[in-house]
Length: 313
Image 1 (tube, rainbow, N blue to C red):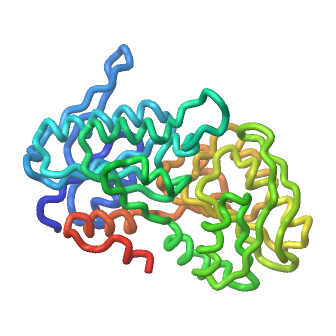
Image 2 (tube, rainbow, N blue to C red):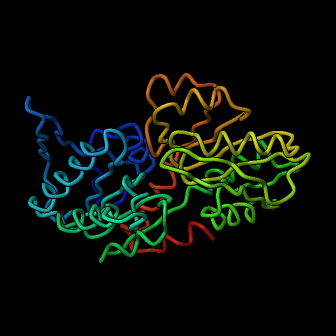
């Protein structure tokens, strides 16, 4: 049991927090996070944390704004309770897709969220698979950016290693897909896709050889599943033997589950950075892998002031 570590969590992903605590052989800290009748969130930490190395775990997933506000209030409470150091552990960083001015007169919300977190008094951030790596630069404090790839690699090597091709569903994800392909010693293909408007995509064509191969579409997240299911259909049309999808963050909003169930995808490999609701748990095409040991080991190394990056060597 590491001395001085205290792990607290909001309501977004309590099961993951419990798994991480089990990995660290500690208990999840005692904190009350509730809501007044008018919708205001209230937080109270019910144990002494003075001088402790405090980790606050909260995914800013649905309901995004409530979970973000819970995180901000928990960090503020920890700071006012004289925590020695506060690390925000954000398995899924919401608003990450709004990382630039893609159109006139729009906010850069990923930067705004970073500013809000910084103002509350956090000392560092621990997160997994940011939508854009440059979001790390929105913070003036250390950011430990983990990748879920090692969790996927272990599963893929066990289940899908023969005749494998890793496919990026769009040009923006090529670097991510290439790194994963190198880890599993597979070839690389790219989907050339044009997005006409938000959450609507049109597949154009496949760059690379996928004929007769087991194709794994690899991305950071699956939201409405339009991109991934259209890409899967294109791969089948180009002769892929089996088509599987893998991602870190299972956002799965709107028609995502229906699209996945109706698609040619045989398996959708996701992690538990975002908790599953009851309907999602019943989807037979979803395989959920745990990132608890990855986050737990990173927390341990941050506390001990040892290398986090060596987790991915």
